[in-house]
Amino acid sequence: MDMGLTDVRKAMALLQIEEKWLEPFDVIEPFSKLRLAGCLSLKPDYRYGALALLKVEGREAPQRILATPKLRYPFDRAGAFHFPSVKKIDIYEKIDGTNVFEYRFKDGENMAYVTYKLRLHPVLRNGKWGNFLDMWKEMLERYPQIPELPVINGCSLSFELFGSRNAHLMLYDTPLDCALLFGVDVDGQYRSIDGWTIQIHR
Image (cartoon, rainbow, N blue to C red; front, side, top):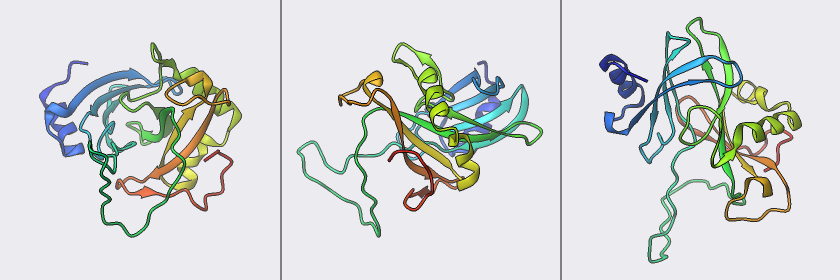
């Protein structure tokens, strides 16, 4: 994508980030078939993988989409643990797979759509590391309520796609499944899924 200086400045303003951390994108969203253009953040903090979506189908539609953040390990290279001061901690089993982030975006006429992204790509796709788009479509068939969850819960959602067909460091008996991890609202606040009435594995 050949971005002009104005677009770069818009992306920097939306994400409050320096230009060096921005990666332009111009892709076809696989579910709506709409063309999305903007910048993705590579900064390893709460903006990791976040989108400054600037245009939908070539029309101006600027919006900030925060995604699954870069989480720091609570220990250093020597193995010493250092926990930050917190008021509450939710503890879940660490699942080893591929992060799939569900989010809503709007076009130039304010019509809303739901789609999904990989950590460092604005949408789902198949590639040399895995057929993530095809595998996620299987999850949507198994759990048809997934597309409704951002509207029902008022936030974006972070999932992990895991199983023996999506092999990483852990070997699972389950061929393929997904787990809902947490929600992210428009202000970047993280939402625990405790108490949510859903049928997705945790």
